[in-house]
Image (tube, rainbow, N blue to C red; front, side):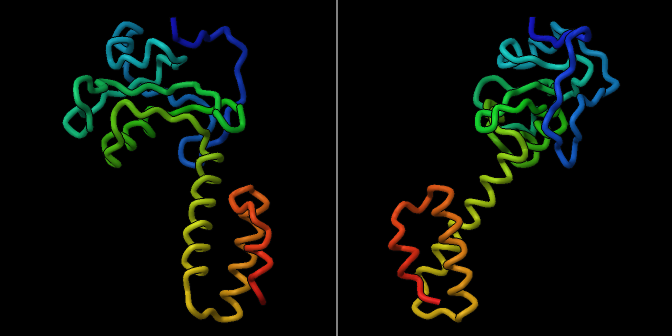
Length: 167
């Protein structure tokens, strides 16, 4: 069964700035069977039964099987290996507001997702600054700093690219 036992020693979860680091009891009363039927993925994950909330299927992006409920799920981050909760409210937002495909599954904690977003922003800024025909001194320094950080993170492998940026 994939319900988390109340007798199980509690884990420490990565803190989410909007939802916290503990399961969020919903006040709804759904059985484990209701949750198992709500979506095929729930049979293969650890979840908190008291956190289930109803879904609005009309707002979901799915082909065959929608999710009739969302429930807080315990997941280990694929990057940092720390445990986090993919909150029912967060799933509702992903699938009903942002339009993510209903079979999408969160695999990274909020901190690792934020790091990924920051790296993508740096890469976009790097490309923007590199492609300019002329840059101010401030922009050139910014480009050099971004390039150094991307190099340290392993996204730029050729140190000559950094050395060619003259400040």
